Amino acid sequence: MAINKLANGKWRHDYRVDGKRRYKQFRTKAEALAHELQVNNAKAGGILVDPRKGGKIRFHDLYEEWIDRIERVGARGHRPASPVTVAGYRAVYQKHLRPHFEYRTLESISLTVVNDWLATFTADDARKRAYRQLGRMLQFAVDSGYLAVNLARNATINHVPSPRPVRDPAALTATQLLALAEEASAGSRYTDAPHAAYELLILLAGTTGLRWSEISGLMVDALSFGDRPEIIVRTTLVPVNGRLHLRDTTKGRRPRVVPMPPSIAERLESYVQDLAPKTLVFKSPSGGELRSSNFSRRVFHPAVRRCQEADSGFPSLVFHDLRRTAVTLAISAGANVKVVQQIAGHSSAVTTLDVYAQLFADDAHSSAKAVDSLLRPLA
Image (cartoon, rainbow, N blue to C red; front, side, top):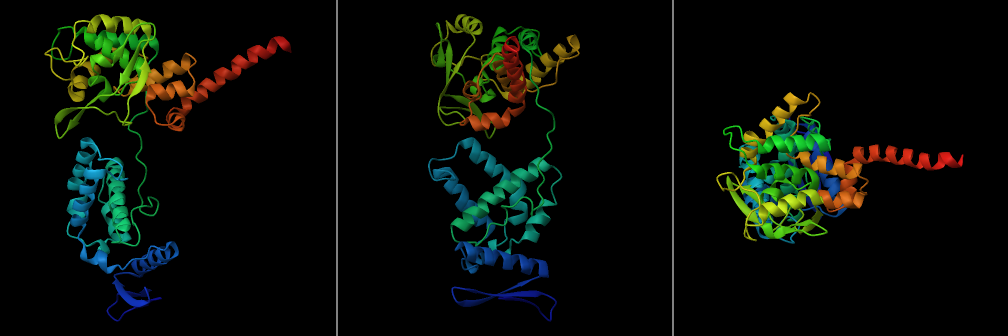
């Protein structure tokens, strides 16, 4: 194989596939060298395919084939992707991928093309999300035999910086959680009518770690009271193309059991005693389903501002920070990582440790001090 400069100023890569000689021209030597690297890597991995297949397939055709698979059996072929996931993929394609790649053949998508496209983004988060989807689609093309190498699988080469967090996550103390819950029950931004259910909603989220979709989709028959009050988290309320859908699966695809603090369980039992088992626990004052955007704008953020006016140390937070609050309170109470994993709903304790590493690090110092208190009398 060889790379040579042609009389017209272009560069040609001369290589072989299955013993047959192939040629491909490029605008620059860098593109030719990148193609040579792809071919060599493909040969080393035993995945070299005839690139003429990719030359006949448009990117949009690949997208249609890929999204159809996602809807039918999912990326891994085990089960269909959720409507929320599919809607997200479609939105990213329409906004970020289609304008740049729709009519391109797969063969024409080079490292230069990918990097030029990445340079058009102004937001790191959107760039990373679109790049991740491009990588999934091109990997599907590789697995289907259309391409030899996935050019969107190396974020370092493709210059995709990790998005900087817009804000640091926050967590409330028990006193602050109670204050926020009380303010939330006082009424919304647009009405002075109190709604006691919002106080329970905040307390439940801040002590059980339920996600917004889980708490807004919580059914009465998922609650269990008595000596060991708990919630069987098995339904979620999620928006799909602007409409709310009640789903029988959680983010982890399977139900999980989360214990409730007895004092909150007592109040919740009194609140739901007249509700039918297949009824949503939390609704708006008008009786409708709760929307995250409306709740945040009309109830949650105004309540946070009122708390900050009364307490200069009250942090700025979003609803998802109540999950961190629940984990923080659990760790402070001496819960181990498996209990925290159950509260957070993570599939693995490793994920829990990764997400809440700093909290456990602080807990480790407290543990070391406790051990020291046991040793001192013996010294």
